[in-house]
Length: 238
Ligand SMILES: C[S@@+](CC[C@H](N)C(=O)[O-])C[C@H]1O[C@@H](n2cnc3c(N)ncnc32)[C@H](O)[C@@H]1O
Image (cartoon, rainbow, N blue to C red):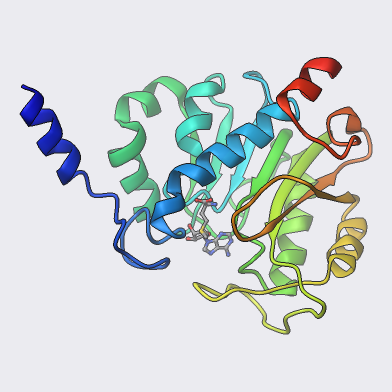
């Protein structure tokens, strides 16, 4: 029996020898060796700044559910919404990471689009996040995503997003992949203001990018105002 378990482990296809962007559900979304690390980074950030089961979460560019695989079981039924134009990634994520039974039980919503066009009415989102999305959007597309996120977030909601920071802005437009774009934080901060957000860079480890918070006017900043975000800080304020 044990030899069968070990054999299955060896055969599990984690794409570890593949490059980011390759045609495999783990490799397409980034370096396969970091698939688990990114899941942990996002789930820990969200929970350290207050995410609870009754909150509604928007996962922008949810890919193969690298983050959804922890969030969907954690959240109450119907509270996870994932937007992803590459349907095959979500399907492979369901098949290999969460299973159909969990989808039946937790009823996440998936929209196979590159925008929020399927949702006309505000979704009243508490927490939105864009992990390794704004590192691939030209300024025009970043502007559109900030506008859409602002429309769908509650007045006390927050969007967390990762960026590549530079001293000058990329001039690319639209979706750039697997290539990357970089921005000056001041440029992003100005766009944030245009869409009714306050902007703050966050000190939260990412292996390649920087985290930022975009928060609406009634967002309670108690979990992010201190520059150290930790579980113990969360405990002090909750
Ligand atoms: C680097 S991957 C990150 C996936 C996921 N957020 C994660 O952390 O695993 C970028 C994802 O954005 C999706 N995508 C493609 N075009 C997009 C667009 N216009 N807006 C948002 N996401 C897009 C890609 O299909 C891909 O799944």
